[in-house]
Image (cartoon, rainbow, N blue to C red):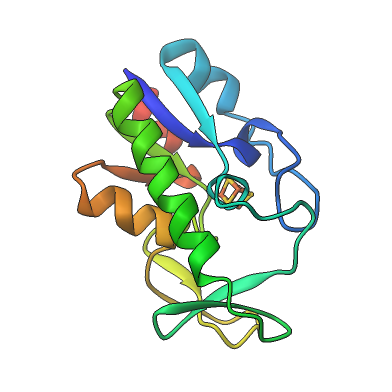
Length: 143
Ligand code: SF4
């Protein structure tokens, strides 16, 4: 099937710190499925590198207090638009990210503390019926 995937998991250096987060099982996933790479934060117009940000009471705020909610929202909507346009049936997204995280994200205090919740893009995809998997669940898509 066609699967949307966080570009950083494929080795693209699109993370906030200019690094990637290449996943060892990404190649196996690409052999079995058609992968469509996206970086919602770049699609929302943010630069790379960029200040780290976390979800905080309905907003997304950088470590220095800048409100970047609008860019995160725009990136989520662009990702959903591409998902629909290209017929993706699922998404594999980077865990704990304020955009891509699913089920658990940082709590907005920029202290490394995790809390229950979803990134902005993961939440929008799920609300529109797209199943979201974290990278620790890739094995489920290889069976
Ligand atoms: Fe990776 Fe998603 Fe962050 Fe982009 S927004 S760097 S795809 S976790």
